[in-house]
Image 1: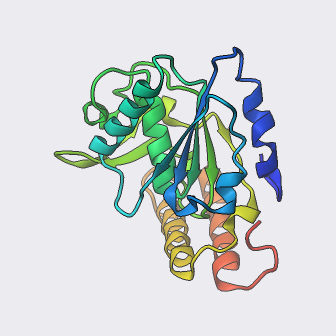
Image 2: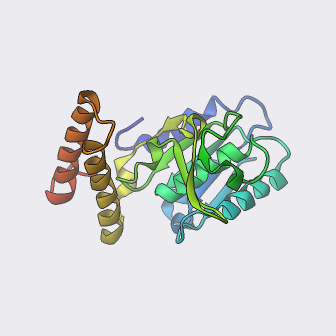
Length: 224
């Protein structure tokens, strides 16, 4: 879902997943929004759990395991869903947590390609930065005790993505630049990659054109 004000529909999106009186959601929120208006807009209901997460450092497998344990301590039941709200790291955390709620062991055990065996908990992405690409990636990038490597799985992909340009308001200029460069580098990589074909090239060229318009020009609708 996309468009200005679409965040207001989040409650309706997840409402159909509240199938029993005990159904609850876990809202994983970048702690930069703690106590801010966005936190007050979360469509939380009685049994829902709010987990503010710190993303000053890249997510670690130990941090994922800690968050998963907090959810299990909160309720023996599996949540109806996980909502990840924030930048790329917050969304990677949401992806990893949704996977580890249904797969045994430590998240470090699954750093690699298609090691996940069980489908994840339903999970939704609400990006508050533009350019990270985390909302559409099958990878949750984590720093483990041995290596920095992604949990790569088809189950990692978000079930729903909600893109509201209004959530970009107030992004610091340096953060705007970093995520812009992230997007730009992804574009260049996709246009010079080993497996490029005409179909993917068309997407890459269009994305690069849009990237340059958004970050080099001053369009009134650049957030959109």
